[in-house]
Image 1 (cartoon, one colour):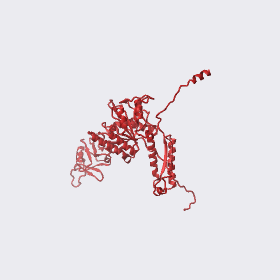
Image 2: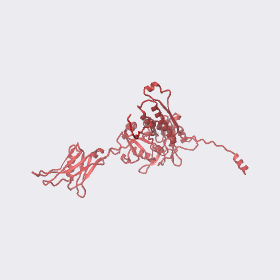
Image 3: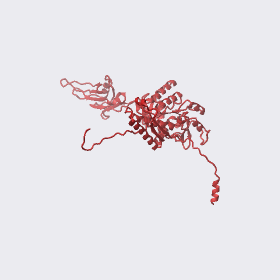
Image 4: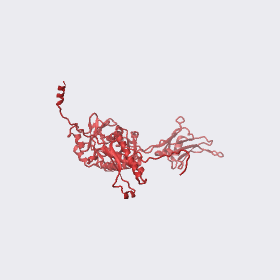
Length: 489
């Protein structure tokens, strides 16, 4: 061991690590936008209107790749021994990504090139990646410029794209389902949304196939965008059971919840019958909501985008362990079909739907989401907030455990893992997200053979908080209060 006369400092790494809670308010959205922007070509200009020598250059291909293209224009040089006029020419240099222009001049070396002349040779340059436009009568002066402003296609087909808020709405165009769905989501709160744009088809079968492909691509969202959707929707398409079941399938892969819309005009019986086709990661939404579109017309729209935005808002404002039931929905004017709601009445429409694991909307000091339940048959997992609590805890701990993989399998590593999980449980208890939780070694599964095989078994539990779905008030008349008053007098 080296010897030291003095003081040394050694930084020690603690055995436990902090568990970071996963992001929960991430929405996966599939839809169409046939008029979406296909990108912007890089461009640049030279000259001035005063000199009437403006030249506009534009990359032939749209996208950010055009932002590294240069344009250089130099004056032509005459031969000193045999002075003759030099013509205007343009050459594309693929190695330097530069358009090199020689400006024509007379035998005395005076530039004679006009914008129209330069534009003509640029547009005819072999292999050129730049086009030019100019019609002025002035003379072009030498210049150097780099094209800029090129943007890639913001919503390429069948590609997950992460969007926050409404900044890119104008790039989607007015037709299709995506622009309106993003507007509906963000009416509740600016939310992080992973968008998959699919082709708009005229034939029903082709459209269904395109939507199913797009829904399947949500499972690759984290690899492409680094964000994993926790709520998945396809407004305008999930009324079809093919799309609804596809959403449920991808929700299972992502530990997400699928919000599935019901068809316009569906009866209570049809909705309840349909619910039997879905399972523990699907919330069936009965109503369609009335909104005002951009033209001021009142229209009915699928509810799933509003519900997803509401879920994101509750996650941000209250916490992912809160139910979104009995919470106000912003910016809707009504519902297509009114489900009767009478507080305390078991046989009203809203309660009958809720007891069949279908959510609806009630009007009570505003329009409110009404329903806590997924389409699960297991009472343990029928509440969305409980299902999401489990997803959050399981995913968060799983991500944190990567730190311990491939370390020596010994008591120290096991204690560090257990300490990490228990610390996270205490944190969640402090947030009032759960009642409690703890981790421990599995004494039966951890054997000499399993440890020799490099396998460590850790158990943990937690106590989620169910929503207060029913408050049962028990009341009776007590005539003794009258007697007490009389005797006190």
